[in-house]
Amino acid sequence: MLKVLIIGAGAVGLGLASFLLQSGCRITLLGRESAVNALATYGLDRIGIFDEFHSPPESFTVLSTFKAVSLDRFDFALVCVKSFDTEIAGQQIKNSTFQKSSSLKFVLCQNGWGNAETFSQFVPQENIFNARIITGFACPENNKVDVTVHAQPLHLGSLYRVDLKILMPLAQAFREGGMPSVVTTDISKDLWAKMLYNCPLNALGALLEVPYGLLGENKNTRKIMELIVNEVFSVMRAMGYETHWNNSKNYLEDFYGKLLPSTYDHESSMLQDLRAGKMTEID
Image 1 (cartoon, rainbow, N blue to C red):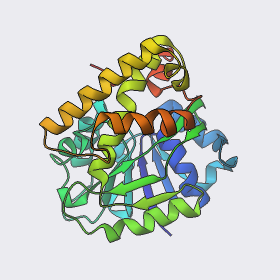
Image 2 (tube, one colour; image 1 turned 60 degrees about the vertical axis):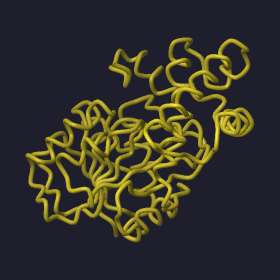
Image 3 (cartoon, rainbow, N blue to C red; image 1 turned 180 degrees about the vertical axis):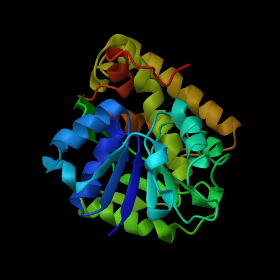
C-alpha cells in the first residue's frame, strides 16, 4: 500500500487524491486551513465525468503545516501547488524533517517549465519527477472536486537521468483508482505539449470568461491562439527542446481536431482563480 503526501489541497491536489484513495493508498493532504477544516469535517467528494466518489474524513489525514509532517514515512509526495509557490514549498521541505539521503520521490504536478529547476535547489535531482496532466479539475467547495474534462492519460516521468521503474507503482495506483496513467521517457516533450495547450487557452479564456471550445469558434480568437502557438514553438526551439509535433501547423491540426473538442466545456483554472480573487500564474 503506497503512502502518498499531497502538497496542496486545491483542485488538482484533491482530484489526484481522490483516485489514489479509491485505489487504497494511504493519503496525507497538506493544505490551507480552510480546506483542511472542511476535509476533516466532511471528507473528500469527487463529482464530474468520472465515477462519483466519497472518502470519509477518517480514511485520510489532513494537515496545515509542514511541521507536523514526517517526510520519511512517505513513498511519494505530489507537489500540487501553483508554480509561484514552488520555491516556497521547496524551502519548507528543506527546513522540515526531510533528509537529503531520503528516498522520498517528489512528483511535480504543475503547469509551465522551470519548476524542476527551482525545486532542485532544495531536493536532489534524482528525487524529482514530473507529471503531465490534461484533466480539468474545479473546486466548487473546499472538500469537493469536480472533474470537468479528461483529454489524455496522466503521464509520469523525469527530466533527469533516473530509473523510471520506481514510478511504476504510482502509475498503477492511479490506474487502479480509475485514472489512466503511464510512465514515459518523453516527459520533456509532454510538458512542452502542455505549454502548447495552456498558453493559447488559459489567459484568453480567462480574459473573455468563456470555456475553451468557444475560443476555437471565433476567427479572431483563433488568430490570437495561432500566434501564441507559433511563439511557443519559437521559444521552445531557441531553448533547444522538442515536442511531439515538428511544427505549429501539425500541432494546430491536432489542437483543433482532437484536443479542443475533448475539452470544449472546460473553463481555465486561471478564470476560476480570477473569480475567486486569487493570484494567477501570470506575473
